[in-house]
Length: 335
Image (cartoon, rainbow, N blue to C red; front, top):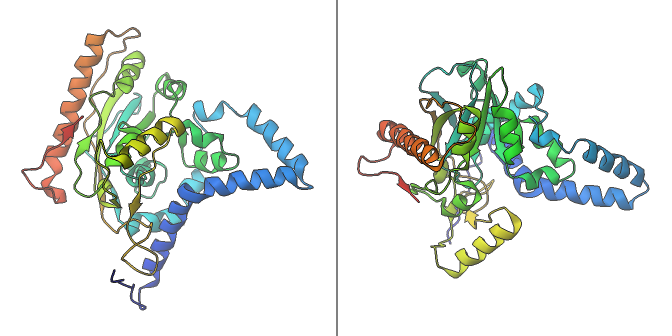
């Protein structure tokens, strides 16, 4: 394989952008493991009392990831996130104003491999969420598994990440003062196994739990489509029914996290590696769908709202696809 090396005279700003993405990829692929290893080593060292005290803190603080987390304005505004934004670059596009007296459930599509657009737009202020939607506080829902990792949980909560457990979403969507925007990647981890350039298949048809939550709490639904999310990595061929896909599906059911086998570019060369490609991500926040609170929705109620949601999501895609380089003959496919 011919290796394409990065030129030596790359501007410092681009080097800083690459460093920011290296830090981000590392935080998801290795930092959790390092934090767990550090905790184990602390337990075995002369500083074991610190590990015991922290374990006590974990017990006392166990409900925080399901009750709004512990966000840090300082962390969300780190300069590194602006370099992270500019690497792709990432942009957040508002369709209409959102009334901050309501609570909202944002359905984010597609999941992609690492939800780069979701993180950049809703876990940092690099794309200006607070300026675009004053009075709203975004919370990106993440698998509960990650909030059980010592130290790492503190870091991810600083950005506004919270557990994806039902109790967590209910806490956010039931706030009487409004102003919460719970962001859920509807396709979940399984959808990441289909994330590759050109992919337009979304796992939505059997995903109705978020619809039921919106009805129970009267939270308005907002379809969000992130153009470019699937363009960041190449993935090994793993069609449904293949041996690789079977292994990935079993691991996902056991571990709760998907393990897509992906590759893109490296730090000093562009031919292979685990850094995402420099492809633009445009995240479009669609028009809200009003929801009347219904504590005991019937199957018909859920199906009706689910249909409206799919129509709203399709509209966001169709109205914007040509603007972001997708041909008129391309359409979303729902499974």
